[in-house]
Amino acid sequence: MNKVILLNKRPEGIPTPEDFKFIEEEKPVATDGQILLKTLYVSVDPYLRGRMSDAKSYIPPFELNKPIQSALVAEVQDSKNPDFKTGDFVTGMLEWKLFQTSTGKGLTKVDGEKASLSAYLGVLGMTGLTAYFGLKEIGHPKAGETLFVSGAAGAVGSVAGQIGKIMGCRVIGAAGSDEKVNLLRSKFGYDAAINYKTTHDLTKDIAAIAPDGIDVYFDNVGGDISDAVLANINRLGRVPLCGSISSYNDKEVATGPRVQTVMVKKSVLMQGFIVSNYAAQFPEGIAQLSKWFSEGKLTHSETIVEGFEQIPQAFIDLFAGKNEGKMVVKI
Figure 1 (spheres, one colour):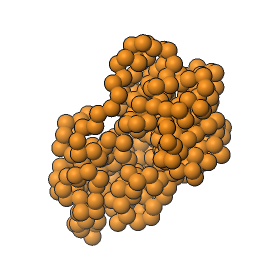
Figure 2 (figure 1 turned 120 degrees about the horizontal axis):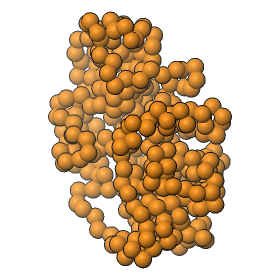
Figure 3 (figure 1 turned 90 degrees about the horizontal axis):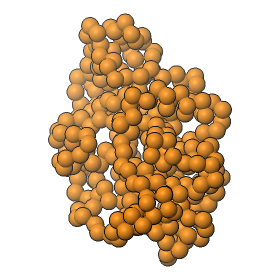
């Protein structure tokens, strides 16, 4: 039998285990033109929370009582498609199932000899591409400038900071524990970082580690952190707006400082983006990330949870900050 995870009901606030449903169905068989895939690694990401609501977004919402989808790494168990052979490893947007069939459309072969298979869900996958294109196309960091990253110890933030260092920036950021702050300095090369949960005055503490102001703000979080960063933004600052995890589970629309005055006064550019905007440039991005990775200029941190049954809880744990770097479930 095959195990499957469905969206049972739409979460209200922070998701709970009851929002998911486990079922069993007959294991599929590959037919002509298809491949049979066995799931090896599952990516859980904050943006999936938006797809669990029925509000309009840039990606259609998940349907109730249908399988949830995210980026997966899978192994080809059987192939009736000449483009794939048994034993190939692939990554792509697939369903939360132990086994599934595919025509191969939208899948990319990956090499487990060049990097760990889970890395293709993180630093060498959409996570890395998000950091790369957000900085390259919107942030335009220059050597000597100061880059601030919120959610700095998360999957995207940890890569964004490293790319900023490669580009010659002074890199600072915020994370949610002293352990994560130490990780930013020791592993990811951050010049300074603060624990936003223990600070008494975010604006002043950010000013203390950014005495020359902030030129580029890679925003993964929104909320109070962004208000404090924008209070320290320099003239002609740039803000790649990647996400706003601080508000994903809000039941009401939050209010905060109005940013227009600061942005006009300092001629700041703020641009939201989704990584698929740059789909045509993915080969370039993957090539560059892979080169930096092979040269030892990029490293990655993973929180790996084991077991198919743990996928929903691993996703829920993202909103409690229980991950360091990329959260991945190993099947």
